[in-house]
Image 1 (cartoon, rainbow, N blue to C red):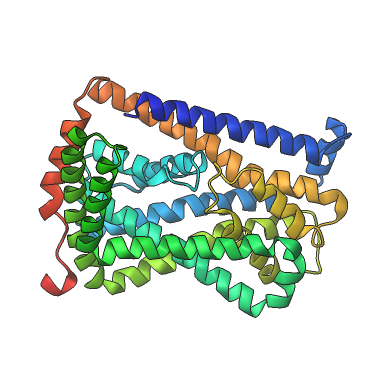
Image 2 (image 1 turned 45 degrees about the horizontal axis):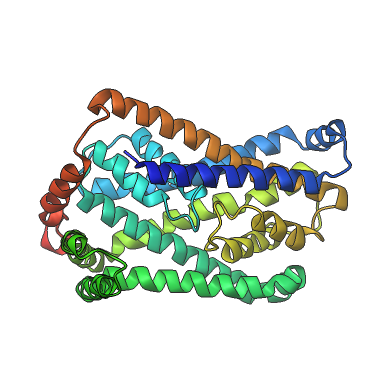
Length: 373
């Protein structure tokens, strides 16, 4: 299902995350006994931590709700647990690849295995990607404007990273919107880019025709996808509402950890504001899971929020619940699903042929708009 080169890259990324996690742990708890660390972790209220675990699950499940909702729009009856499976797989690959680039392609592959057309899954993933990033940017702008003094005071010298994050996120959204709203023009530019790479001898001429044909099939789907999105704005508003709730479920985790230690003095909105700004700053950086830089931002942004002796366990609990636990559970879900697919389909299947047949079949499979029904 995944070629050897990608497996090697994923393994390297996981090792990178593990090494960064270990180094971060040693830096945070240098010259500290394990028993002391456990005592600090044990101080946290277990009820609040259970609430935090629930919030992370709601974050994962929030995407599952959106996937199920969109499949329902396409008259596809898919159980919620299967949609939850796609979400765990997506977040697993997103967390182990730079800039979260591997999540959605993996989801589309596993959806295809379950008989969901690429035409549907590509549209679903495109809409989710645009809305997911757009909600982050809008939340970031809201908190930066209305909590400007508070944010700037706690961000300090890292403000350049926040500005860079805004630029990268907005550029990414713009690119997705161009692909979505101007697919024919995007296809033309894509073909020109392939021809240029051939002239520069970066791509072999024999492979260019195959790549152009594949690109054409994909953008034929986006042509119909763009029409569907324009004619179904009501559905888009519903997806945006679900995404806001999904994002908020994760961003509130730091506030939950804050309350777990019985701290007070800063409001829910203030703490969420800083966590949103961290998301703006790190999500588009080309690091698997934004490992290392996320912890550095947490220390800088929250050093005046948490007591000095609690900042380290707060990071450990926050990242443990929102990142490492998701990687472990998502990895197990991915492995279990992969083994089931091997049992069902066997190891040797003509994947390229299946992909081409599905892509060709789904050019006409994007459902009609509400106006045409």
